[in-house]
Image (cartoon, rainbow, N blue to C red; front, side, top):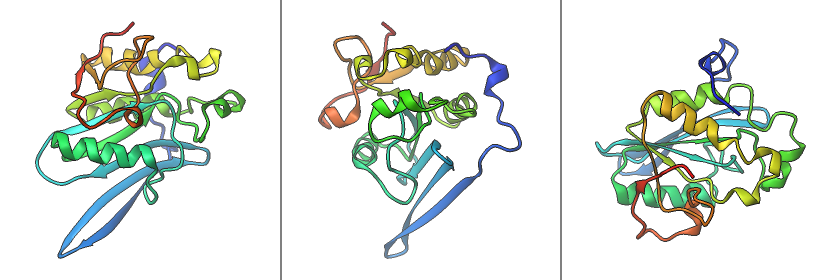
Length: 191
């Protein structure tokens, strides 16, 4: 899928952000939000506190995390974000369709989502560092394996370098669940 600015517009009917605040006691709280639209999750945002940079992280597709409930991947990103000093991180995906198994993407009428390009751009513009972490392409249905170019093309259009925690054998960025917290971010060179 090739990106074009026309497709990145967020129409007035784009889904709205839902914000949640969780009290941590002693006057402290965590704010998180999500943009959900039926079977799609376009954005997931978590405040970690502090004055560090805002990071954006792009993976394959959303699973169960929704702004109220965190899944294993989001808990892992909390750990990376805290260790890297991020004040906030925003999660986007190359496919906005929510599924716990990537094989489910091949049955979706539109696995990318009608507003996803616009949200990818908006997420990048609200962050100072962009991390890609979708894992090896071989796990995806063949017809969806080139959709990583959407994220890469949008980043290139705003001169945004892409970082990763290392690469898989196929040159694509490793998924955070598959690695330890000792991994450092490095510049990702597209294969």
